[in-house]
Amino acid sequence: MNKFITFLLTILGINGLTACSNAFESIKVDEFAKLVDNKDVQLLDVRTAEEYAEGHISGAMNIDVKQSTFIADATQQLDTRKEVAVYCRSGRRSAMAAGMLAKEGYRVVNLDGGILEWQKTKPTTTIETDIFITKSGKIVRFDALMHASVRMVYDGLEILIDPVGRLGDRTVDYSKMPKPDYIFVTHEHQDHFDPITIDSIKTDSTVLITNVTCAEAMGFGLRFRNGDMRDLRKMIIETVPAYNYTEGHTQFHPKGRDNGFIITVDGMRIYFAGDTEDIPEMDDIENIDVAFLPCNQPYTMTPDQLINAAKKMKPRVLFPYHYRQTDVSTLPDVLRINGIETRIRHYE
Image (tube, rainbow, N blue to C red; front, top):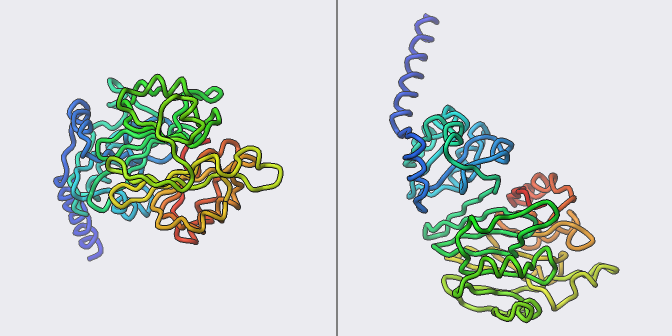
């Protein structure tokens, strides 16, 4: 009897796998490349975070299929109305992920042969990407460039935050990115304000949004002061203070000079804090969906200050950035207790 039950379970398992595999299509590299050029297609790397960091297809988000939270994370980050293109190292894990996602109602395509096949003829990148979905189903994409430099893409708009071309031995090649519609610069320090890079990437229609000092240095740009709010194309822009208050540190970022930016798109509120400590004004910052908070003293926040700032505004997702040699690895576990998802990206 036991042998018979085992036989039945085996058959059922095989049938289940077959049904699962029929719910998605595996395609070759060239066809997959054409598919992911479509901005409405969600590209998903289901390998480990370590594999993803070593190199991935540009624009791919990363959710490890071997994690027990895979489906929960996927349903939070993926829109069921948009097709999903998945890949892994060789195609096996992504086939499993494709089947799981198909069961959840997603339309899924799998890369046959995985990234091993892709790398034979196509490039990869180490720039990490995160995707969010607005209330009406529009995609907001963030690329972790370096330090405080972030690329944001929303509804056809290309947006760069504090774009810097070189810091030490690290570089960002902006020539491989579309020209920006908007450039935000929080303040004039060289790790945030790079006039040479701005001149090389701007077009006649690029809008620079910055403080008075940087606008004067560039000779153009919309001048924002703390507390300003403007309704621009597809975005509402608010500026909030960014400064040091710790004794002996106030010379780095004096009160009233620098800006943090809250960008609202389709109801999603995104906070780029710039260089600041956990200032009292953060008590009034509310309903933040995604926050980018700095973490390196003496210039910005200690980990404890960042935790305090996060507790004040309670963002749905937090990205520590500008952290250089500061250890931020403990932040996700600490803030998870407060209902804040913390994602560590390479912003050192």
